[in-house]
Length: 263
Image (cartoon, rainbow, N blue to C red; front, side):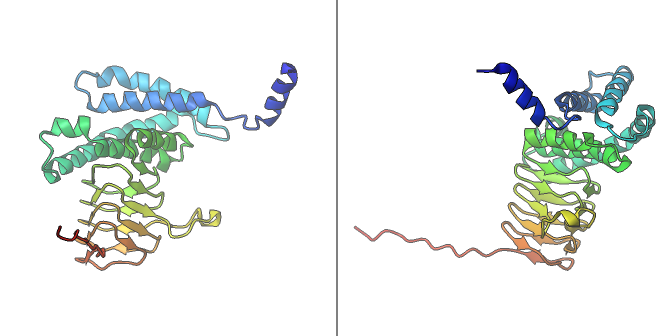
């Protein structure tokens, strides 16, 4: 075995000079510290913000391969958004507490609900996405995806008091718009009707208006699809057209039970 030849051949095929996996690891560390800074009673905001700024500067160095604003410019914008983001997340936690009869305390929501954690990381990533900060927002939401089973693209636009119950299997696409007081259950997909690269800049995912409830495993597809306010979408529904406000949409399965003959 010619080890030198093998090394040379591997190096020939390592074609991504900017692919540094320490970026992924450092994003996860930054995300954890950020979450603790905002929520943990024993973590000092005053002490942690300078540490977060230093970690953020490293992320800028690793993620900005082309022309990029300075780390200071990105950080100053981002840190100013944190109080507003925390206010939104507190509303999300209260929505979960008020909507789920199984929730026993607000502390339980913050610490034990995967839906809340996924929403929290999405909201913290979204403002970085809006500012044009490359790759890091997606790595943040993918970190939450790996832990919770909830896949929210950081580009989605989500309003106040959002509730994901049970969480696992939820998919929310990049151009989805979710307005206020929306409640969704496990397995819901807000996706694209077509998958094609030339549609990258087109709205591909649905709009969900205020006060909509979407039950488990419903699939809603298409950038022109609008679910009107106060609508209830039943479980397992497949929707590719708009639904007017105040509607109830449900799937009726054909279930037959065959009983054994009497012995």
